[in-house]
Amino acid sequence: MSEQVAYGMNRTLNFSLINRLAAIVILISMVACAPTSSDEYVRIEGVGIGTTYRIIARAESDRIPEIKESVDRVFDEMTASMSIFDSTSLISRINRNQTDSTDLHIRLVLSLARSINAISYGMYDVTVAPLTKAYGFAGSEAQAESNIDSLLEFVGMDKMRVEEERIVKDDPRLQLDFNSIAKGYTVDCIASEIERLNIEDYMVEVGGEIACRGRNPKGGDWRIAVDSPYDGNMNPGENCQVVISMTDRALATSGNYRRYYIDNEGRKIAHTINPLTGESVITDLLSATIIAPTSAEADALGTMCMSLGLERAKEVIEGISGVDAYLISAAPEGAEEDFVVWYTPAMESMISE
Image 1 (cartoon, one colour):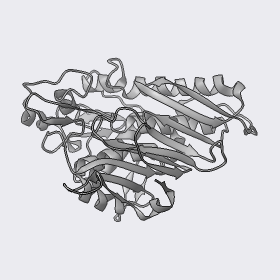
Image 2 (cartoon, helix red, strand yellow; image 1 turned 60 degrees about the vertical axis):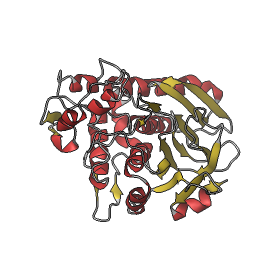
Image 3 (cartoon, one colour; image 1 turned 120 degrees about the vertical axis):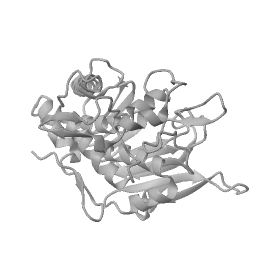
């Protein structure tokens, strides 16, 4: 099975190997199930990979334990592979140079990350772990005395590669951080498991990243609320900017209105980091909602947009086939509205105010 992920000359995303995450099922036990014929929808909620999750699926209620067991297995695999908050995970051991071995999860995520890095002017980069740690966004306190210029010496995807399933670093201090893609990737893995159970109508949401297929309990498309990007809007769904109706696709929203802090000099420090300058990124773009074939793509592309700012984000998104976006930026001073909205043409039919 090929693990190549590449953009063509027109920036068309060729990510068929991760499409529906067919490759992942080889890591998860295969069980044959009869197609569901139920008109009943079940709802499963819980906590995994440090965030909340929610699944709505057309299935008999007696299948809830079976579905939950599959979901828990995915979360266990994701934690063991890609959690920087678990010191025993594979990525943590790679970061400490205790191993150079990879698994299929890490190789797939790195392949997608490298492709998006190539079209993002270098602004999307999963080697920013030293910087996210320095700013206090990796489970530790901000490091006030960090020398950002020195950290940049071992940040950059051109400083690492995978050879024969092993990580090769140009500098042993290079570290990986998949937080900008891991939730989306986990959603895709769970969706793949649900489809393996022959469930055809479902929505999976992990920490705000979503994949859906088929029809919702009312027989229509799935309706996804996008929050207004006010600073401190901490309650998802409480202040809604727009509702998007969709099916058979994935959605993720990135923004700097929840994960940020004010430093001792009164500056807003957001969790999006510029890998080229080492600075926290504050642009005119407040929120980026991406709709893509997979949640991993949507997750990473949303972060990319936040790093690029509105105009460059529009340029890149318009060049990717099969990807749509709803971008919210700050309105000019004195304007009647708080926000200015831009979206790709295909979004028109999906939007409900």
